[in-house]
Length: 191
Length: 158
Image (cartoon, rainbow over all chains, first blue to last red; front, side):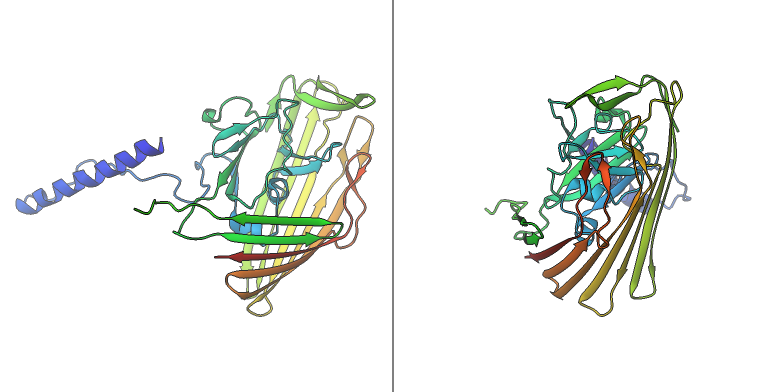
């Protein structure tokens, strides 16, 4: 889909390029043909369709609120309840629906737990994520099955510069330690 | 509002140590979400959100819909006293929730306090205390949540 959009966008530009000189040549009264605006969608990070009830969290929020796991981060959003089950796993409810009815995706690829379907949201760190998208309630059929209550999509970080990265070190009470290193590969290969 | 026929719910301890997915009948879920966030003056950023959720089991009110509180309120404030310093306070209040048909876990309020220092843009040092008032609460019956805990965090970006 994004490829198609980009292609259509490029076509729009070329058409515009060829028609403009033609207009300048003959001094005809100006009128406007039906204009088609083709614009790339979802430019904003984690942006979703307007008619979808949704919430988005971005890297800025994970860092500002010190949320190291996806479960902790989701707890910041309205409509989402995070709790811990008897196996000390973080479980998430979106508007009252549990994780079996709101599948988790990483960049659009579903993550399933064959054992019982309950994903431990503690196991996904926010260190490598750019955003978390949460579709609530009735959501796109493109997600696939099991989206009775919505869908959660983790958007991974993409490199912006030739050389970049970050290192995080943390310590907490009771032997809690955390480390994260991000060193993304460069977008273009050096030739 | 959602109306669900044949709502499937996880029921814990049907036998000691076992759980089961059970059909609890017809469910109706109504709710409200509100979220606000704004800068107040040059030094404050305040925000919060509220979730109200009303879940009814229409076919058998004695079988509770478990795991989710009816009210969740989250408030956060960031105060920047002077340039490289930042203070963050997050308050969360959740009302009581049913853990099973008979066990009701009481509501709770927790406060997290954080202090951040950014000597230069690439480096950020943070110290924080979670559950500042050492609230004793459970979100799963028999498994108390962590009490007051401190953390340190350093991040360097290049």
